[in-house]
Image (cartoon, rainbow, N blue to C red; front, side, top):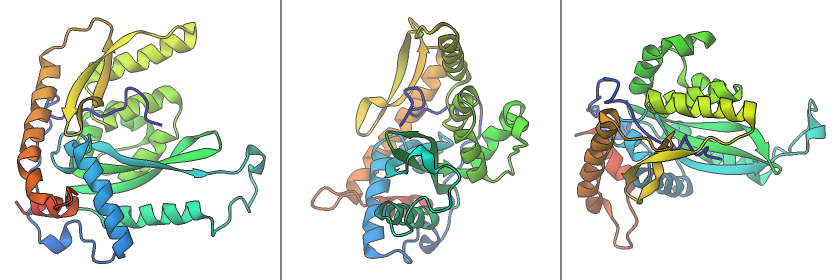
Length: 281
């Protein structure tokens, strides 16, 4: 359910937001999994490993993107004729057990800088409602809300607002507000956000898809298709795009250098250990 534009990019350096050093805290207070079951712990570690090897690196490891998607999953929902009824799903449904597990992980894993949130998608497709588990850089997102107060102020959102509320309202807004809101939340540059919103507006009125190119930034798992934003067809990258690219690549190279220290003999990444140590550097 990722939209083609909202794949993951950062404009923190471009817009002059301050970079935030990893906080100095005791290990037990950073990504503390002591209250999780062994099964939850294994799942949490694998989820964060996937996030670090993809675009969530730029939220979990480096403060470049206010939010990043770590994982998505779905649950079966009843047909539309259940609208307004009380007894819609069984409390013992396996899908709800899965939601509970992801919610336990989201509630538990955090640092001073980063929190995890589980957000349901508004749209239901083919009898499925999807969920996104996102990493949120709390101080960076607060800075972005203050920077773009002219947009967020229409809901009364300020830098002190509850960030889960900001994300949920954005997901359940109308399409063009949702597109622009997610653009800011995911840290895209202003020119890319405006292009995407106006291209969608044009397509709504004319029925013609607006052709586009994509600015690609590598992650550990690959060079294309993860950290990317849409630009007009034939667009020539500017210095602002280059700043985003260079900042991200610098963070990726730092991650590559330390990643090998956290690999098990079977090649599995000990993501929680890596993030705990990063908290205390």
